[in-house]
Image (cartoon, rainbow, N blue to C red):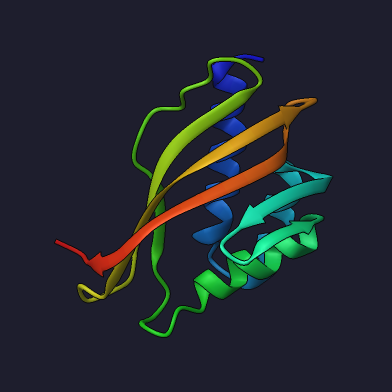
Length: 124
């Protein structure tokens, strides 16, 4: 698996958090995830694009306002697994959440996501 392929899938996944409208979230996730994706998130294990979509929509509807998710590192891909750092920032110096995701790819799409979220802190 090439790092460019992983980076493309990851960046498309992240773009779902920043979509202009909620109606685009599913389409973006479908371009980056397998239909049977396994999602290891803050609340445990879930399966399918719908479970990831719920997570993305919950983040998009943050009480401090819609924020921005960005990849803030390169994509490190030692084997079939890739990892990258991300940051989610809400408007007006609201809460900021940072973390690392580890993803597994199959047929150029993400089939497993493991989210390691860091502390929520004010943006600086």
